[in-house]
Amino acid sequence: MNYLFIFALAIFFIIIYLDRSYSHKIVRKELLKLKEIKSRIELEKFNVKCSNFTSGRKNLGFHYRKADLYLLEDAFIIVGFYTIFSIKIYRSILVLTKEIEKYKAIFNKADEVITPNQLNINSTNRDVYIDFGKSSFTSTNVSIRLKNLTDSEKKLIKI
Image (cartoon, rainbow, N blue to C red; front, side, top):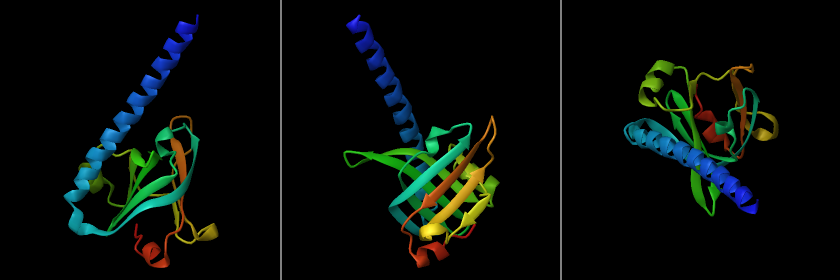
């Protein structure tokens, strides 16, 4: 009986590991595409603290505590991750833009390429508040708060 429990627990952890490693590999491949458009990147900011809230169909890809930010002239890219022993494990890549078709062609495996419903660069506690998606049975509404961005970095966010 104990062997069955240990076996089931091992299978559970293997499935979790495979899921996380798959999403990590996809995001890493998408990040390589940023090198192609490196000249258009206005600002890169790494290890930004953030908090996320999802409603509707739960999409766990948007649950992370830190993110790398890439600000382009017409897009804002958020790459969410968590750390284990100071190793970045990427969860998702989010492209916020009005040029949706253009960026879908570049980042075809991104979790979302979307125009945000709401963007407030001076929200409560001087956070940047981003809201996108719809809350329903088949879709997810996501709210992201980016913390500790300077005023000059906030001014570069143009969507």
